[in-house]
Length: 215
Image (cartoon, rainbow, N blue to C red):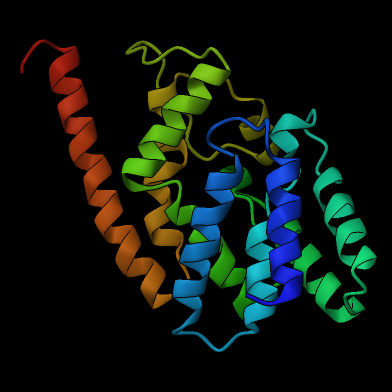
């Protein structure tokens, strides 16, 4: 691990020491590890991938009153303080600006192999056993209803609708999590996502069976 990455790790750990459990340092660490794994099979700048993964949620807008400018500002200030070249800084900021799902209807103006890698890694952490745990942790954090059969999922939400949604936690599976498998960019990401997607489908089958008193 080079000095810049080591310093970034220390910075992120400090910044997120009191973060919500699904968006804390351990989330960042998992995304970082998955990003480096995926990057092995892609043509990309490994330092940009590492920095993008480590800083992608440095100030998630969900925890800053929806302000999407905070994260990029914090990341830029940190990178500039360590004399990182502007080309790298700009690339990392573009990753932060374009990584989020935002209802799936967000028009992206930036594309790169590094963004694809980090985005796949971030989405993988919303799938499988970890994805389920994070989903319910955030639902509890926001005091949302676990499940309400009378409130159906809302598909195809706009970016603003998605940001303001307070639907039951189970609905989030249909509004985002189960859609991620088909949005992966890399072959490694697609393979891992398929496995985790199946795990979530099996979980939902068990959940409904238990809810309805069938098992």
